[in-house]
Length: 270
Image 1 (cartoon, one colour):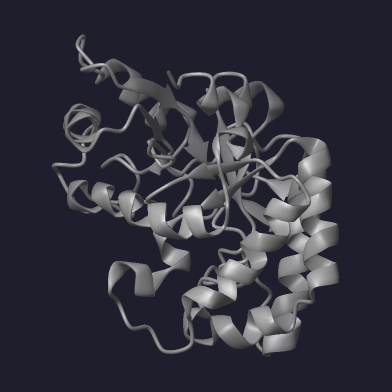
Image 2: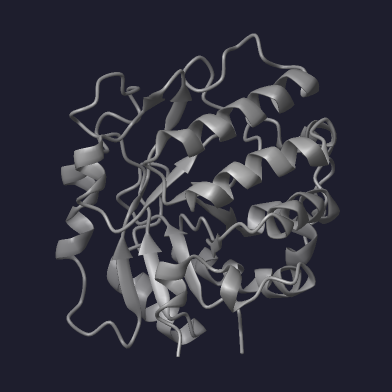
C-alpha cells in the first residue's frame, strides 16, 4: 500500500505567489483523483484581517479571500476528500498571522517557521551567517510549537532565502537540538511536513548546497521521537501536484508507516 496518498499543502490561484490560472480547486481535485490521492488540502497563504501587522503582500490574503475556495468545490470530488486550510505566517516574538477564532473556520493550519526570504518581516536583516540562521530556525520551531495553533509545521528547517546553504546551515544543528525540537512537537501533536523541497535528488534535480541526506538525518530524528507526519507538494501550479508522489521512496527509507501519519489523515484510509 502506498504511504503517500494525501497532499495537504496545495496553493490555488488565490495565493498571490501562484501565477497559474489552472490552479483551481476543481482542477486540483480532478488531478488528485488521477494520481490516486485520497485527500487534498488547500493551504493558501493567509493573514487574518483581524490580526494587526500584515505585510503589504499578505494584507489582501485574508480569511474571506481564501475561503472563496469552498464555493469553488465541485459537487463530485471523485472520491477525493477535500480539506480547506491555510498556510499562515509566524514572524517571531509571538506574532502570528492567524487568530484562534480564525483557525476554527479552517480544517487545518500550517505554520512555517523558515520564510527567511521575508527580510525584516520574518528574518531580521542582521541574521545572515549559517550558525545564526541555524540558531534562529531552532528558536522559531520551538516558538511555533508552543503557540498551540498549528496543525502542522510547513517545510520545517528549510531556510528559504538560504537554500543554497541548506547543507551547511543544517549541519550546525545537532541531533540533540533536533531531538528537543521534535520531542516538543510530538508531545504537542504537531505534525511535521515532508515535501519535495527537502529532496531535490529524489526528483532528479541537482541542487548545490542542498542534498537529500541532510534532511534524511533530520527526519530520522523526528521519526525516532514519535512525531506525526503529513505530506505536501507545496504546489503553486497544477503541474506540480504530482511531485508529492516522489516522496514515497524517501518515506519508506525513513521507515514511516501508517501509524506515523497525522491521525486526521490516517483515519480516511481503508
